Length: 546
Image (cartoon, rainbow, N blue to C red; front, side, top):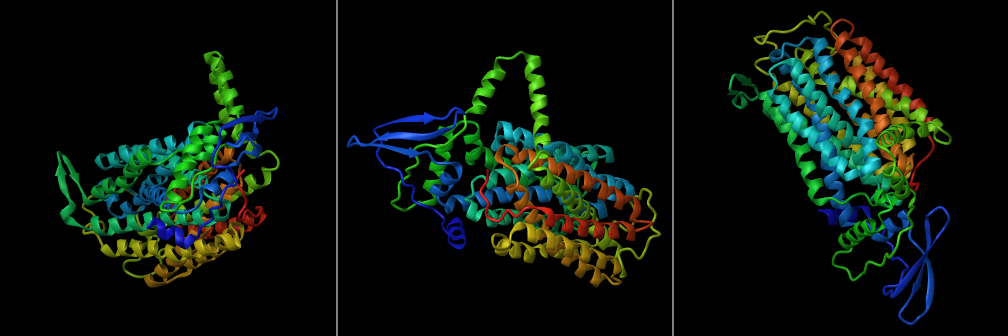
């Protein structure tokens, strides 16, 4: 399958112009500690002086092919697992609200809990990824996500279920920003936009997987059993199944995946980075007669000196230094020349997260309210207090709710295909702005619809268009910042988006019964605002990572 991916996306490998036989070499360094040239003596005694390869040159020399196909599948599965863990809560609402005695405000708090955890975990994991490595953080955060997500299925009380979902969200908050930093740092610049767009499409796969599991498991009466004194309803089985993708991703990363070569170069680990490039080259050129000829990398050794100086300091000095260093990336995001782009991204992340998650997490509940026909906001006289477990509106479970959720999730497909085909030709900025504007218009028409069919159609339109916004934002935000700030920046901005998602879900929970039109129209306005703000971003199409 990965060979097919290589054939579709093309081969951008270049033959590096380095000698295959080296007998002796020495290095010249500048005053800053960056290796610039390598002096090489060949077998015939001829002395040559070659510039050592930069990161971008080494990525190009390693080629493009099977390794990148395998990387796409592994990172894509991790991305899909995050989508499953986040979106599974929305499919629980129509049934779990009875067993956990939830009103609309409680449901808003439940959907907000995972985003609160993501906000807490986002910057923390992003900073650790920039300091300790991408792979280690991915393994730990995915494991936290899966373990506590599964434990939530055993919670007999709402407050415990809420707490476990929060901790699961802390794990999700780490894996989402780090996975895109990790993945992008293996890509040649000419293919980066397309490949990151392809990675983003796995969110759709996770969305479809969650909707499919909900459709198959939750309405099933055979999935129910007793676990001690706990009535293990089908929705609890669904929660356990949703934790499997995260746990399997953590296992795969721990056993099979290398550390990011870009991070290794930044950390001064030239030998380890060369090993990663060697592995990439071997997989990309498997079956060919080409030989790996990269002998040196241009790295900066300042980080090694800094760690040595820190190790000699006292305990309080190290703690103070780490605290200041942890806050330093935030200040750097808002210093020139990054100030404008950072301010604009705050607006965009807030608008799209409030709009998308505020509405998307409530779509199954809105579909349930249209089961008898009419607009999702037609009936605003529903009680907002806790509901009885014998409430007939929960059992038997209506399968149409989950069928409609599956159709809406599947409607992501056209938007994902559109993004992959046009990202490297149009650019992330234009796609981001246009898709946000169209998303705002589609949400406005969700408020105007009068029938169940019209509601489903407009929800599908919103799904297809909004996914383009997310894909473009993933590409743009990755390319706007240098390596030493990339994961921290993504962690910070995803933290901002979690605040917006929390507010969106709380607003829907408070107003969906009494003033349903207010949050829907607010979502429309915010998405439109984000589309206008995106026009202020710089173009990043096929730019090199710095």
